[in-house]
Length: 148
Image: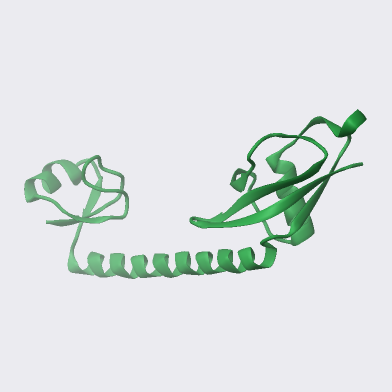
């Protein structure tokens, strides 16, 4: 019997999947616990149209990420920090500060979780880093840490 899962089911599938299971398992377990819906032809057709819409949305998001990568790839982002003698910073540069600088200077919204730094930055200077724009799409930029 074909069923559409409404929640993740261990060893069966993830939410939104169309899977084939035995009739007894579907009736006695999945339907009673509201883990799945019966895969009637109308529901399967609706599920297929939802999957097409989902794929189109993901393709558009990936295309936008590739365009953003072309726009900002290789650019320099400047962050001004207060520092002491010999260029040593008071504190360190955070990914949140970098994300704010990217959105301000390059007009691209980036989440702080998507900023990938190799090490903590505690000195003035130039540092390479990456930002994740989409799954499998990363842009390499340069961070310039300057004194205020």
